[in-house]
Amino acid sequence: MLTAPEIPRRFVRFLQDLNGTDSIATGKRERVELLGLRAGSTAIDVGCGLGDDARALARVVGRAGRVVGLDASSALLQRARALTGAEGEDVDYVLGDAHRLPFEAGMFDAARTERTLQHLGDPAQAVRELARVTRPGGVVMATEPDWGTLALPGEPRALVHALLAAAEARIRNAWIGRELPALFRDADISEAAVTAEAVVVGEFDAVRAVLDLPAVIAEVRERERPGVRELLVQLEHDCRAGRAVVAMLLFTVTGRVA
Image (tube, rainbow, N blue to C red; front, side, top):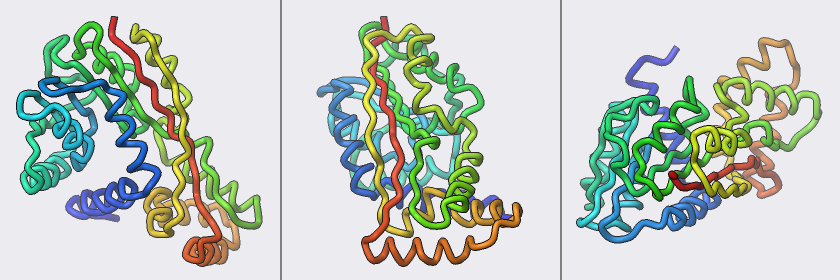
């Protein structure tokens, strides 16, 4: 079992590996533009993690604006503050709960969250909170994966399906990507636009991080499915040889507060 200090370090590595993939990095830049921010705007990034997106927002709004990065992990916020200080952007980092944002209604021009709702106990409440703290006419954005679309190569197919099912079962809200439009409508966020992009990961270290392979392997082995080791050895070989990728759909919904 991991000790408390080890858990943040492993998660930091996971975030760095994932955010460093080409498809994720490109999508992030495009989504920042969709928020419609300009110099002097205010924005909040809920579930900010290492602060990569919050710093990108801060570069847009400048010193005249304000960006808040909120996360439930003090360890991640500590790392985010260190990175922000080194890079020179101005971000206010706040420890808080996405279900109960510690801000008054209508404080921000834009509110966003990315790959956070999949882990929450009540994602619908979190979306309502995003809408609440955004001014009328302001933009709300949520980006989430859909683990039901995860594609993994390999043989035998029955074993691949078992790995996919184990990976999906580890996510609290595994189908949250396809559920975002309904959450936005229920929160009275209008003009919702839906896009989907394929996140493609070809580097085996990133594949290991995305799927949390040690935990997934343990779960599949408990079901007494033979051949797991051989499958993963082949997957690693194929990834390093440029013969295999892992892919999943990432949904983004953008709308305006009435």
